Image 1 (cartoon, rainbow, N blue to C red):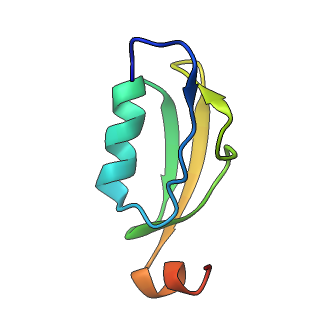
Image 2: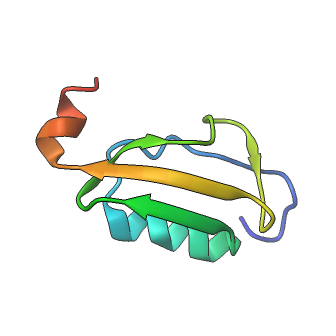
Image 3: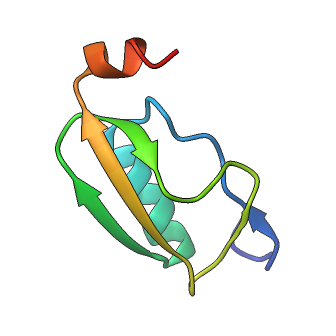
Amino acid sequence: MTNDNNVKMPNIKGWARQDAIGLFKLIDMKYDIDGYGFVTEYSIKKGDSINKDSSIKVSLGSKYDFENLN
């Protein structure tokens, strides 16, 4: 995944905080996370190109909050 310069943003809604952080650290991209729990919103659209120069803002909430977004 990190050997390619064309990494696409996956759909991370519902991911646990640590899983999302793991992705961002793998790519070495900047991130700002608000809250605890599961990803409910994020600032980069699914399918957009991401790399170490990318920066993302992520909002987290309870699993109940995520289930209501579907």
